[in-house]
Length: 374
Image (cartoon, rainbow, N blue to C red; front, side):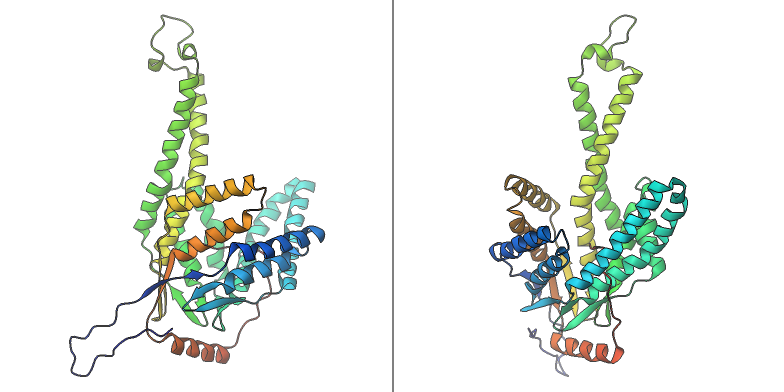
């Protein structure tokens, strides 16, 4: 699609650049046709004891990529089942070896765990490069340019920093992680850029995760207190006094434990379904591809929670048969919430990327093992 624009004439001093046109990313998939792919994949994976699942993933991703539409063009997916299977075998072999060594020789954990942590960034980079290189748009492939030390910081050390700081540094690490994930990718050889503000991540964490989790913890502890026998709240000796004025140490510890459990569960829930989508919005709203494309995301956390919970309910009551419809429903929502604005002549940009990539050469990507996304 070409965007109509009018170049200012030499004497037109008041002419302004055309406003960007936003268009939602479309998804042309249908649950009925995807159901046939899904049931075939499931059947063959069961018959082959999981071996066919590698080819099943290729069929699934090819279907969703081809039907994800921007300006009338779908994406391409170019991996083969053998590539996926090889990556999975390597990943499974590493996991089995690590667990065997730890179980058979517990003291080896002091060596195996740090060694695995040291290898993990390399594996993550290989996997991200594979996922990017196997994806294309209009015959131009994406790429990943992450470095070992940055991946080590954001994928291995970052989560521990967030936990060790009791969440105070989690928004900051999230900001760096999301920005690194975006700017580490390129379309052809043109890198994506993004500059999300730190304050937005702290606000998202406070409103979208921390305060709701505290409220859930209070409600959980208060709920247990309401159903407790009031006489348990009165001291064993002395004159009876109103229970809410005097609590036993045992009961206080019990309610504190309930509060912590409710807080942790609530925090995990809101981190996944509220905080993460808000972080995605913050990142995508500053995402750019050169001077050619800008992006926007307006995911609604309440809507996303409703879709996720209702999908879970439908999947359970249908014994899994509604899973394809649920997957299409969620994917279509995420596509519809993501918009792109193409500035200038996109055809010229794509032709330029093809020529530059052809002259630059391509690194072969052959390892798939970890699914990492935002």
